[in-house]
Length: 328
Image (tube, rainbow, N blue to C red; front, side, top):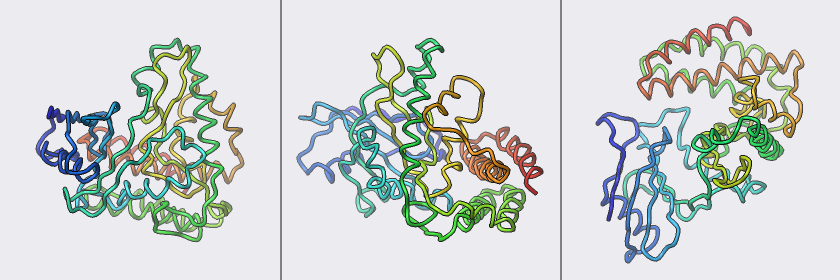
């Protein structure tokens, strides 16, 4: 078996498997007689540990994704892989774009961590291919992003909060709880969480504005170019798949990460709105968007801390302070 892990520091958040563990997972999923030809760790993701695995007798590789050990997971990122698995029936409208789940194991009997084996998506990761096209063709990509996001946001749920729970009856309750989890994670990381708690207090005080959102809608939570596949040979950027849908959430669609990124710059991405539809720019919607930005910045702070990006952590306080001034 050829085994190629990514070289990481001993204390890195993403912990690799051994070759023997990859073989043990493969035997659990495919039977004791399976033969693993190779397992190559993919280094593009920043949360799960992911391998492309080739097996004897199978024409196409499979993707093995392994969650962090339970004790390494933040409260605000609890059991994300299980959340993704629970969301799949609700994402039926975009099934052709998603990898197929071949096996999933939450028992921890094999390696002590959640893991999932998925089909290998066709195409090339968008960050590796999009830049090969002239920028005049990029709007086609973002129009497709808008159409996909509109389809996802049309899916209705029965509660607010992560798809796999906990469940909340109101949007304000879900959002305040999420901010509280982020603040507690920051405490555990030894970082100042006072600004996030102030945002949570404002959100609780102004719950009536948040609870104008009465119908839970599906949000992918973390979707943008980084987890999008495109056709390597198409004459214009053509989306063939999306992956890492583990942060799905029943929410106000305007709180979705995809919406934040579509609004981030006045460049080719403005084509997103041609298919998604116009934004709600009412005063209450604008106010809510600032609360959502604060939540995004809190999550970004945690991720930057996890990656050892001290400068980015410091910058998040400045950015969040500006947002807090606009909502307090």
